[in-house]
Length: 137
Image (cartoon, rainbow, N blue to C red; front, top):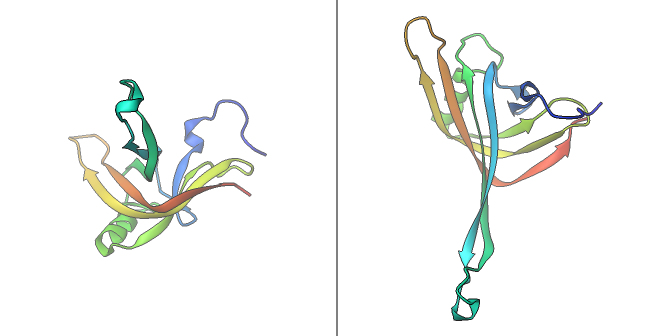
């Protein structure tokens, strides 16, 4: 049954293929639409634009572990080989929407902040082509 009301952020995850990245602390999906300037002397002093190319990214942060289902080590393998992967952002609840596409891992950073603190890592996938949306079944 689809989620109703305001969505609790713990339901929203990033998956690589069909596997959820382990111990996520945040997950972001962003789309950017570029524009092209069409301002001319007939514009009456106002800027005019038309839509141009678009791009998308999925990024997140997670707690570092060696024994999770999909961890830093798996992302490390992707970035060092330059392989792309199917990535998904959204809920795994039946009836909810999930956004997906082919992504190239462009950033991976591990952090060990200080004594008695959690080690973390962050990552960014850049979209290759257009993303799609679908209903989780």
